[in-house]
Structures are given as structure tokens and as C-alpha cells.
Image (cartoon, rainbow, N blue to C red; front, side, top):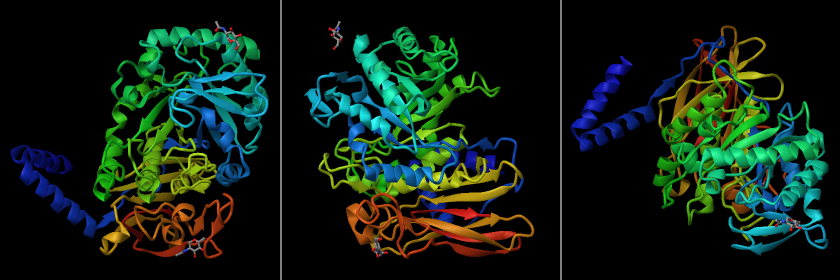
Length: 528
Ligand SMILES: *[C@@H]1O[C@H](CO)[C@@H](O)[C@H](O)[C@H]1NC(C)=O
Ligand SMILES: *[C@@H]1O[C@H](CO)[C@@H](O)[C@H](O)[C@H]1NC(C)=O
């Protein structure tokens, strides 16, 4: 039945673009008014994906790690960590990570920018002093992944080891989750083989210097440039593994980068097509899944985890803060993370530097962009962490894969194998300034026999897509999850309930279903 409709629609589309466009409009309108009945089993299906407890992960650009090392950022990480069953892993890396040198005599400052577009651009080169490394001692609730600086391939071994050794000692061995061999290597190493050969030399010297033995399965490789990850040109993780990585079983993570947005204008329509769009997200996975399947075959492989180690909504030149880290981008982040999770990707890492407009918070005002400030997407990370939960392991399936503006995910309790929560995302873009009434979507959620009500918590912004959160937008731009908001101004990142208490609704079950409303531009979790 479904196949018939699809093939008929594609024939109509082939017949006339105009006709196809009007069909698309008609079906979008029909979808907006009906009730969507979700269909999933109350018992865990065999293809449910284990949700890694450390799936949600913050990321700091290497040269700015010391900017993040303050009480405000520590509080934000603690807010996240308190909802996870294990320590979150902070990734320290990025383009600047290949452009740092160490000078032990640099005592009065943590770093000096010496070359390139100083001090904020991605081309800036830094000399780090010993003070920089103290930052690895902070964030007691977290673990670290840091990058061995491979530079342009002509790395200086003394310099490279100076960074690795100091970071390792300051963090403490038990808090180092992984050491990354380079970043976006195709920028420097033209072929997968060249990257592999270079990285192996670096790996050998690190193994020796740190005295690694049984614990040498600690390396992260790839960190593939976004364009290479999607096109496999010149190479992505799949090709890097073919060139030899992990033949020595020392790879813990194979990683790639993801930047979603392509649009060069930034309005509600482009936001809807570019970010707030489940198809735009799922369409991008093809190239990544080829790499993932190469390192995480169905039979389990060698225990290498495939992760997205640097991600962001949009870094297109001229992008506005509202576009790349407003509430619309926050719902993009929720949907993107849950889509990745349900496709067996083991971790999604945020990215941030003080001047960057994407990212969940800015730690200070060095980027002259309103900081220190929590931005709206921080709440996406909290939402995903809460969906995974800290009380017990869960397994996840996506249950509405083919919609453009709606998505749904079910989490099963790993113990009882019963469905215990459902995340629903309504990506239909709504902007309060449009003066249009805010639409909604009703979902009929199947509920196990004997349950007479469910609880619902909401990720919400009164303003709609452009809400940036209280710090940057004031009281009209609040972004709350179950009534809680994270700010610099009110709580220094600890979080506070705007009405003084957690907000959730109770929805009665009728005929084995809970009917829940999700307004346009909102995401909810239904606790079954
Ligand atoms: C490597 O770095 C060290 C320490 O900064 C320096 O003494 C040495 O000259 C460098 N080696 C090369 C080949 O540049
Ligand atoms: C927004 O949040 C601030 C800080 O918690 C609060 O004072 C204000 O009342 C909230 N505004 C609305 C409209 O809820």
C-alpha cells in the first residue's frame, strides 16, 4: 500500500514539477491537521539500539580550553553530568589543535597568538605556556579526549609530546578517555595511506612516552572533515581503515565531523529546509553510515566506537546567532542527536570556541558576542541526556522515519524490555513575529495495558524558532525544559525552575492510547 502511493507520487512528480509541488503542499497541510497514530510494540524489538550512557558530549576548541575552565562552565558540565549515569567526555580538539606549540618559559599568560587570523580565527596559531594545561585539572565531573597536534604533517616530536604529556599529567590518566591522532587530516595528508603512516609514527612515540601497555587501546582516529566524510573524497574513516588503522587494535574511536547547514540566507523558510527538517538530517547519513559499518560491523568487530566528534548546526559565513543557536537550531540538535543515536552512532560531540555562533554556550566575552551566556542549544543536550536517562540502561528505536517535520523515538528499559519513554519532535517552524496562530500536532501514543495516565515534559520557547534563551534575549526569549532554564545571569549554569518547580502534565489514557499535543516548534518526552 505504502509502496504503491510512493511510486505513484514519484510518477506524478516526474510528470510535472508544478503538479508535484502542489501535491507536496497538499500532503503537508493534511499532515498538519490530522492525528498521527504511532505504531510500536510495547516489547523491545530486536533492532533496538543500546543508548551509550556517555552519548552526549561537549566540545571545546583546543586553543580556547583555558577560556572554558571557569566556574560557570564547570556548573554547566555538572548540570549535564548530574543527569547521566557516567561522566560526560569533553572533547578538546579542532583546527587550532594542530596549530599550537609549547613554550615552558611563557609564564605570565596561558597563551600568545603568533600567526594567522589572531586571536579568534580558525587559522590562528598559538604558543601555549604551562598555565594553559591547568585547565585539564578542572571539570571534576568530566573526562577528556584531547588531540595530539600533528600540525601539517611535519610535526615536531618534542612539541607534540610536550602537549600530550602535560595534558595527560594534568587530567590524570583515569580521566583521559582518548587521545586523537590529528584533526581533519585530509587537509594536510593527501591520501589515507600518508595519514596512516604519519599517525602510526605519532602513536608509537605516544605509547612509548606514556608507557602504555594493556591500556593502549586509547586512540581516536579520523576526525574527518565534513565534506570528506560525506563524499569519501579524498578519504573518510572507511578508507582510513582500509589503509591500515586498527590492525594493531589500538583504535578506540573512529570519528568524523558534521555541519548541517548549507543555506546562505537565514530566515524562517531556509531554517525549515536546512535545519528543522528530518529529511535534511537523514539524507546526510549515507556517507557516514558507510564508514560506520566499516568499523562497527553487525558482528561487533573489534570494539571500535564510531562517533561524530565535532558537530554544529551552521557555520556558513554571515550566519546569525538566532539561526545557528536559536530555538529552531536547538530542535535540529535534538532531532539530529536522536537520529544518530538510533543509527548506532555512539556519541555526538558539540563544538565551541568563544567567538563561534554555534555551540551551547560561550564561556566569557572574549569573542565579544554577549558572553558569558548559555545559549538555547544547551537545553538540547540536557533533553537528550534525560531521554537516555541515568537510572537504567535503555535501547532506542526511531518510529517515524519518513516524515519531514515530525520525528518520534521510543526508549525501552533494558531490564524489563518494555517501552518506557517516547521523544516526539515537531519541527514545523513557527515564529511568534509572524502573528500566525501556533499550530500543533496530536500524537496517539500506544500505552501498555494497566497504565491509566502518562507524564509529559516539554522543551519550549514562547517566542518560537528565534528564541536565544534568557541570557541573550531576556525574558521574552526564555527556553525551558520541563520548566527549567540554564543561564549565566540567574544561576551561573546551575539551572533554575522559572516558576520555582518542575513543570509536567498528566495525560489520561483512553482506549490504550495517550493523545498528546506537540505545538509547532517544540519537542516533548512522554514518560510511559
Ligand atoms: C622542535 O621543537 C623544539 C622545542 O621547541 C626545538 O628546540 C627544536 O629545534 C624543534 N625542532 C625542529 C626540527 O624544528
Ligand atoms: C523568563 O525567565 C526569567 C528568569 O528565570 C524569569 O524571571 C521570567 O519571569 C521568565 N519569563 C517568562 C515570560 O516566563
